[in-house]
Amino acid sequence: MKKLIYISLLLLINAGLFAQNKLSNAVHSLKNNELEKAKELIDAAAVDPKFKDLAATWYYRGNVYKGLFKKDEINDKQSAYRKKAIDYFKKSIEMDTTGQLENSSRENLRYLAETIFNHAASSFETTSYPIAISNYSQYKEVMSYAYPETDFTEKDIMFYLALANTYGKIAEEDSASAEMYIKKAKESYEKVLELDSNNVSANYNIGIIYYNQGVEIVNNMDYSLDLEQLNKVQDEIIALFKKSLPYMKKAYDLNPKKKETLIGLQGIYFSLNDIPKSEAYKKELEQLEKSTSLQKEPEDVEMQE
Amino acid sequence: MSIVLTCKSLLSLSPKNFKERLKKTVNILLIVLLTTFTAFVPANGLQNVDTNAKIKAVFIYNFTKYIQWPSSHTEGEFTIAILGENEALYNELNKMSQIKKVANQSFSIVTYNSVSEIKMPHILYIPSDKTDDLDKAVKLLNGKSTLIVTEKEGMAKQGSAINFVIVGSRQKFELNKSNVEKHNLKVASTLENLAVLVN
Image (cartoon, rainbow over all chains, first blue to last red; front, side, top):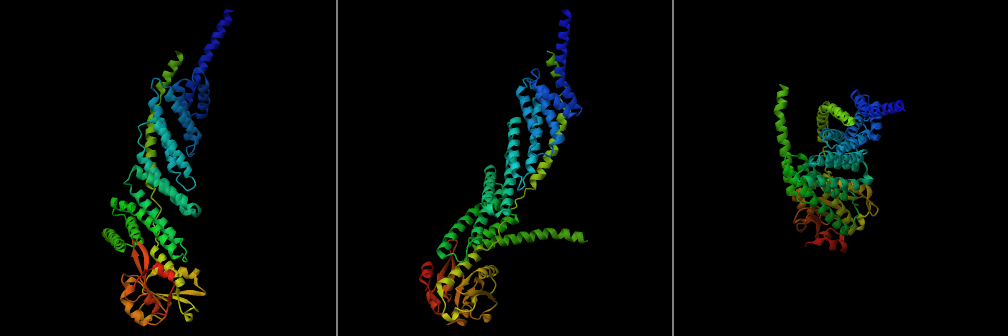
């Protein structure tokens, strides 16, 4: 009987040691970059009652999955390993009563969030932009969790500018749905202006969008349009050109040396039949081009010498 | 207790090198991101279209509907001539000529460099920079069935039949009925009703 008790005790101790080893072995494997083995061990630890409530289990599980993401899915914009790693680091923070793993978990979350952001940035193509939208939203969610004080203003501006630009490209490529995508582009630029009313690019592009809408109406106008209808169309396009003007003017005020803005103002005033103002901007553009070419000349001379 | 100890030992392993590596990686990423984002230059450009020229072409097409030329002028080509250079209008009228007709008459769009070249078009368009030639053109076309169209303030009083004017950013037209009739042309009341009448 005594012997049986000893054996049972020994078995219990062994079981305990094995259980402890699940976690320490996982860390050991992780340090040795044996990620598949580490995954197996840490996954087992995560469901083991002795480890599942420990912050360290989730912290290292996060690290194992982060390692797997880097090894196998670094180019996968919607990596499942990364998603899990994020969940595990979050769980680690929630369980970390001592706070010892917290900073490191948050740093890991930052790293993973930045990779999501990176993937968002490289997804601004006409076909993959939904990934950019979803990744950027995920990036903000993770960063807000890890660092609640994060100021996203600058990145939001970059994001909406890139998104608007992508919508513009889609509109150019797909005439059937151009109107819808131009509307989306305009909304994105408006979001930029909500964040920074002095953004030159957003002001310029909204100006262009309104102006081009007017031009499109004119382009699609039938030559046999009757005169009463023509008057109505003129009212409609003039309203659009007038809407365009303050945005283009603001872009000009913010950067008077931008050629595109001068061309824009010249075109808008011309379409509004304000020829003197159109001519004034045309002259300014010519002067700008002249001064630009003069600035270039000395270099050219030097190069010739 | 043993578990807590194990965790502590694990914590001692808590990877400082992870942090350092992380910082390095994040820095590299930020450089990549900044480079990527600075490449996001707006692509949508301004459409380079002379909207006024298209609007004028629509007006001119309407004039062909509401002005009646003598029957001797309703055969052959319907000629619209521009005195001097107005590339935008010339191009628009050419586009129009490819898809529209006046009854059975096809359009012919021509340019005259000077008054001396003027033959007998159905419509003669005199751009603002050529209005000094209006008097000569009126004299040359006296009694001929040519509708003279101008685009400078006061021209309807100086001999043109129709003169484009700007009213509140909008293109409108003045109509001098007697100048129309001097050229054996008839104006439909519809056109009169939409015009700014000038005597």
